[in-house]
Length: 399
Image (cartoon, rainbow, N blue to C red):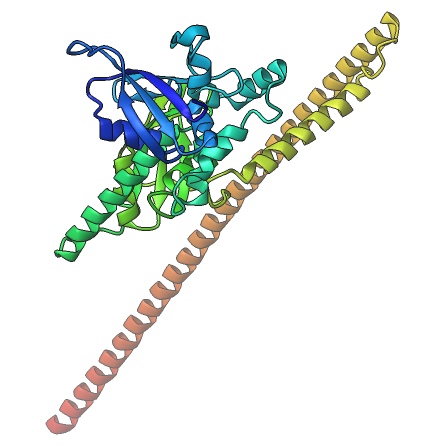
């Protein structure tokens, strides 16, 4: 009896093999059998399961209230279900010393419950035992996700990602073209619980491959938001698409291909966690320090100052503001005057330059006219001289 559990509320869509695989995530089973009357079509069924050891049976109590296919199941310890006289009480699942599947999503609540009951010193001890039974080939980061992802969902997600990887690698071997751009290596993750951080999402997607960048979008004050996850290879991104439908922090994750690459911030580290948080914190501290300095200058340091002192400090502050305003106005006025003066000087220079150019043009024109006149006089002199020579020669011939 200590190694046995009762499972109720099993959906008709679940066969014995699926239920066995669901329960063996906590340990090997010796037997699994249906008990009670034969249910009508569409009605839930009841099972009794016996584990190989008691620790595995206790670990399986974390599966209480977990959703299996289309409805949650109830898991009850045999020693708690069997009452005096052999009567069965299957109304309350789980155990007072073991947090249920819903409580595991809020470890703080489980811890407070365990401390209040005083039954377990470490309320997550049984959860750790169940997580240790996960397959050894799971990445360490993916095992850490057992704190906010149901263990059966972890196993199913890992199997689906592995199958998707095998299928895509087969297509690549057959000669399919592989686009290795940033967009092809990025997936969209929607309906993510706002309590999930970038590191937690990177741990969850590490089962598909090496995650190189994670970035969230949307307000963290909303119940859910969406994000983008970039992998180092196209194969990892294709494998990550198989994780859609997984329950992550009580919300069904939606994973699909991203249409846009991630706009990366150079000040962010490997997972996208902001290094700028430190700069923002330092900026806030500087603002607070400056605010305190202003309060000290205004006389707001001590609360025991009298009203007269506060009024005098406020009047002094007003006078200081008026003085700064006058100085600013005078400085603006002087700058405007200097600009106007520079503009006037520039206009005078242009006028002087234009008058000088006119004088030079007139001088050149006059010199050209004098030269032309000189040439005309020289030509007239030559013509008179030649005429005289011709007249003298004619007289000599006549004589």
